[in-house]
Image (cartoon, rainbow, N blue to C red; front, side, top):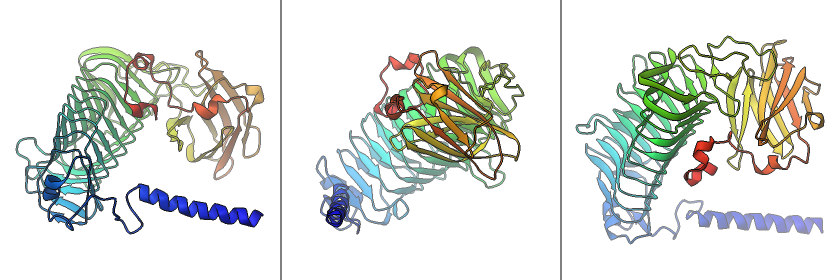
Length: 478
C-alpha cells in the first residue's frame, strides 16, 4: 500500500512539473507552440514581427544580433531567448520606444545607443531581466539614459543589469505606482546616477545593488535620487561607493528610507536632505564608512524622523553604550545635525522569507546563516571574536511572553534574554545577549504555539501611519 502511494505521488509530481513548464510557455528545449510569433523563423526582424502582430500576442526572439530601433505600439509580450545572447545593437538614438499599455519586454541585451528604452504615457508595462550597456558614447540630447519613462503608471523594472551608462540608468518623471527592484547597477561614468525619480509618487525602490566599478580612478555621481516627489519608499538596497551621494532627497514629502546599506560614500555623503523635506522617516539603515553620513542643504527644514516604532539607524561613528541591554544606544546620536534618539548598537539585517515577508534582525555579530523552520522556530548562526559579547535583537509580530520562550546559544542558556512588547501590541522585540565560544555559534529560538500571529503576519517593520491611509501599489504588501 505504501509503495503504491509513493508511486502515485511520483507520477503526479512528474505530471505537475510538465504542466507547470507548459504554463510558462516553454518546454525544456526552450520553445513550443505557445509563442505566437518567432523571430527570425516567422519574420526576419523584430519590428516586422511587431508590425504583423495582434494585440495580446507573444513574440519570441531567438539569440542573435538585431541592428534595429523598435517602436512598440501594441499590447505585446516580447521575449528574448537570453539577455546574454539576444542583442539589440544601436548606433545612437532610441533603441526601443514603448507607446502602448500592458507591454512586457524581457530577455534582451541592449547596447550602444543614446537611450535604450523610452516609455511615454503608458501603464502596466514590465521591463524584466534585461542588460543595458554603453549608453554614453552616442549620447547627445539626454546625455545617455538606459530607461527613460515619462507620465508612466504601474511600471515595473526588475532583474536587470546596468553598466557604462553616462547619465541616468533609470529616469522617471511624473510617474506613479512604479516598482524598481532586484536590479544591479555598476557605475563607470562620472555623471552616472543609478535611479532618479522626479515629480513622481507612490513608488517603491527595493533590493537593488548600486555599486561603483572596481576599476581605479573612476568617479561617479550617485545612487538613488528623489526630487519633488511624494510617498516614495526606498528599502533594502545595497548602496556602496558612490562619490557624490548614496541617497538624495530634495523638496519631497513623505519619503520612507528603511533597511538600506549606505556605505563607503568616500568623497561626499551617504544621505543628502535638500530644501523642503516634509514627513521623511529614516530608520534601520546602516551608515558605514562614509565621508559624511548626513548633509543638509538649502533651507535645512529638518522635518525628519530618525527612528520609527522605537528603532533608529546604525551609525559606525556612534560611541554610546547600551547599559540596559535592549540593543539601542542609551544616548541620542546628533553628530551631523540628525537627531537619532534610538541609535542601533548593531547592524540591521532584513531576512526575506519565501512568502515575501521580512524578519528584522539587529546584531553586532556576523550572521552567517538564518533559518525560519516553522511558525515557532528560528535558528541563526553567528560569528565573533572568541569570548567577546554578542547580541541579537529580533522583531517578532504579536505579544510574546518571556517566560514561555525557549532560547539557547550552543545548547545553553544565554547571558540575558529580554522581551519588550511595543506599545501598539503589534510586535515584540526579543533581545539575546551571549558570549562567542565557537568558530560559529548557534542560536535557537522556540516561540510559543499560541503566538499564531507569527505565522501569518511576518512583515517589514510597520509602515508609518502617514502612509497607511494612502493607496500604495500592490508590491507594498509583498
